[in-house]
Length: 165
Image (tube, rainbow, N blue to C red; front, side, top):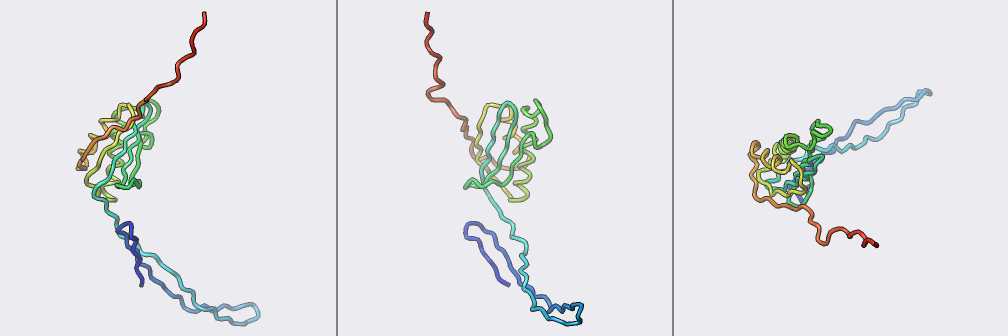
């Protein structure tokens, strides 16, 4: 049995090799051939990865809200959206849909990765901005900071051409 350790994470893989017994094959001419045993690698279950603190990215538009939990480097842990939670049409843009999406992604991140605290990054001007953050209180996930990263125009669009009279 050999073990592999991934240096970037705390994951440990155990690899075992099993050998099978020699296989005897018979052909129609009653000849017997012995085939050498094959080595088969069987991978064991990976150790559970834990992320104590991470990031929560919320994209709140008028039509939908997307909630993404990531580790500190930006690797995605869990994703959910109002559309993925079963809301359709104009209901996807509501605050309640954002709350359900936040709870669904939060439960996955909490149970699978034992996420305890997050830095929140909000983008967009939809109705689900606050509701997605408030849904974390039900899951006992501590909010460390809240940052608005909504894009702001600095120069604006090109003006219309001057009217000639």
